[in-house]
Every structure is written in structure tokens, then in C-alpha cells.
Image (cartoon, rainbow, N blue to C red; front, side):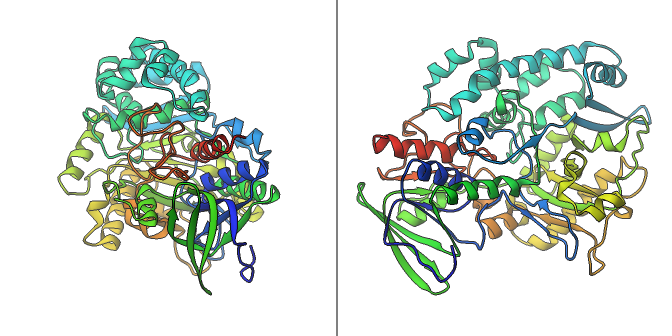
Length: 523
């Protein structure tokens, strides 16, 4: 919306926050004939799911924060008529390691035969591969049962258990720490670590954490699309939010950027949202308010008691390279190794040590991380000249670095952690990564790092937590409501990542909040 125009006085729905979930809700409600206003604090919509050119004078449009797609239901893409595509990665992962004094690794992907042979080379037999197949056949069956429920009213725990219809799978994923399954089913330390990493993305937990936070994280990482595949968004993550913004706008929704919501008042039937712009404050009325922000921010806006503080635990690094680095393991082409998830310092014992050191208040000595190269699967994010010259992107996601470690010196600790993280990568390269980094128009290396505190500052993620708070089980619990988006105010709904079944780039909370509104209105 142009800056000189103001919102009208009242709407059927006012959505606070123009991230991808808010845009999904806006598009659904506007397509149902409802008047919709989206208030976005920043100068652009998209939230954490945006593409930007972070390096001065360089035509590389990177997915700056969120970067892969798994949990976005095709139903949402079809319902909203989105011009948005993803591409599958032919390689799932590569994990380098030194065994018996020689560099080697585990390549998962490229066909069943290659994967089986890679397991045999690493472990000396067929047992680990067979265990891998059995385990992921089990999670695949669970994915087919659970994923479709994410856009339905919340099932009860017993209803979801009946949908899963596999008592062993239910016990492994829903009832006992995932570390039990990892240790009983796999013998090789590296294989154990590769399995466990899906339980730790953005989640600071041990494999045997009694809270089962790691299980919830693992579950969401293996059910996406009913397969657990993590795909590359064509054009970068901003292609999705641009398509969503277009769909919402085309359906009649008003998108007001530079408008920061600062208060919500509601009597359960009608509500008012106070907002702030560069030109002053305003108030808009609404029958329903949908908050695409964290539960903490929701409490601030409504004046309610805030939930317990959240804490993120990751390092996000974006890089542009002149070329991919050569590997010490000459049996693997770097173009294959980096096209999937490239695991660094993620052996099972290494992950446990890193967690213990961070829990004791120290940076991990060997920070675990995983890397992938978007441009190998989708070169459209790079300008033609960069593609012709062989430039590539690298995205790194570091684990087990809770926000508390950065409290005393965010800038200093960020640089220390970045250096030690890249040193772990360099240990498996035949040339230093620094020799491969591109430079921007000012001659600076094309690399940027974001800590949890940086994400809290830039995006208002509470404590830098990428899920807004600990992930929830995808079934009804006390006070979760019919759709998992309800709050203590009948006409104020939470449509952000902190909703039940929120987290990741899914659009699920946005869809579910819109469905809850339409049900209340009798549509």
C-alpha cells in the first residue's frame, strides 16, 4: 500500500504481521470475500521467508533466513493458485569423516545402489544400511498418516495414534527419547549422528532430553509432504512470499507495510488494533484479529501475561563462493557433496559433547553445523554473469549455540564462533574455504553470520528462536482449541509459528487461523 494512503476504518480481519503465515491467512480470507488488512512493521512483507542481496554490488539473491521447504502443503499452493515451485535434491546428505587416518564419508542419495555402497564403505557391512532403510520406512509411514492432519482440526492424541496405527513407531517417536531408537537401531557413530541431527535443528536439546523437545523437532523434520523430503524453493524463499503477497493482494487484501501494530483491544466480538507509522498513530476496527507474531508479542499487544521466555540456539551463515572447494575425500564430487546437506562435526558423540559444553555456558569446541548449496539445484538466484563464472552459494546452519552464550558480547562471540565453525569445515577440505569466497564491490568477503540475538533484533524472533517457542505435538492438548490457533480472546487468533503445528515455512498456522475465522462466521 502506498505510504500516503491509510487503511479504512474497519475490516472483517486485521492481520498483524506480513510473514508467510499472515499472507496465507490474508489470501484465504480475502478469497472468501472478507475484507482484510495486513499490518507489517517492516518496509516489506515476507518476514523470515525473504530473499535479499546481502552483498554490496553482487547479483546474488539469497534466502537470507529460512531456506528450504518441506512442511508447506501442496493444498495451500493449489488453493491459492500460487506460481511457486520447488526442486528436489538428488543427494540427501554427505557427511565427511576421517577413519583409520584417511578421509572418507557417507553419501546418502544418488540412488539406492550408491547409498548402499556408501554405507558399506563406511561401516564395512550391510547392517547399518538395512537398519537405515527399516527406520526411514517407519518414519515414512508415519509421515503419510500425520502430514495430512496438519490442515485439519486438531485430532486428539488417541485419534492421531489410531491414524498412525503402528505402536512401535508411536513409542519411538512420541513416547521415548529419540536417543533410545538411535542407539538401539544403529551402531556406527557417524550414522547415529546423521539421524539425530533432524531432532536438533533450532532445538537445544540432548538426544535423551526427558521433555522430548528433540522428538517433536524430529517429527516435524520427517513428515513434510508425507515423505520428509526437504526441497529447494525455485527463485529463493522470497519467491514464495512474493507469490503469497500477490495472491492476497489480487484477492482484495490490503497490505500496509511500515505499519507497526502496538496494541489490540477486544471484547470477544469486536476488536481494535492500534498501529504506528512514520506519520503518526492510527486505530482500525476488526471483527477478527490474527497475529502473525510470537506468543510473547501477542501478550504484549493484548496486555496479557506473557509465556515463558523462548531461546534460539543456532548460527545462520550465508556465503557466496567463486567456486566450490575441493574435498579431501576425492571419492566424492563437491557438486554432489554440497547439493544435499553437508554435515560438519555431527557425529553422535560430537553432538553430545557440543550440547554439554554449551549447556555449561561455553561455545562448543567443535561446533556442529550443516551446509547446502542452493545454486547447484536452482541457479536462478544468481545473475547470469555469476552463473557463467561458476559462482555458487553456501548456506550454513549451526547447532547447539543457545542465545545465552552471546549475551555478554554478541559481536565478539559471533566472530569467534564463525571462525571455529569454518575451521571444522576446513578440516575436510583440500583448500581453505577463505580461498574460495567471492568479494563484494568494496572488496569484502561475501559472508554474513547471524546469531540468535541478531535474529531477535532483526525479526523479533523471541530469543532468536526460529520456531517462536518449543515445537508442539500435532494433537490437541489442554487449551489448544479446535485448530490450535485460539487464544484467551474469542476473536483474536495466533497465526504465527508459535501456534500448535507451527514452525518452519509451512503456512499451516495461517491456513488454520483462516479456517477458524471462517467457521466462526459460518462460511
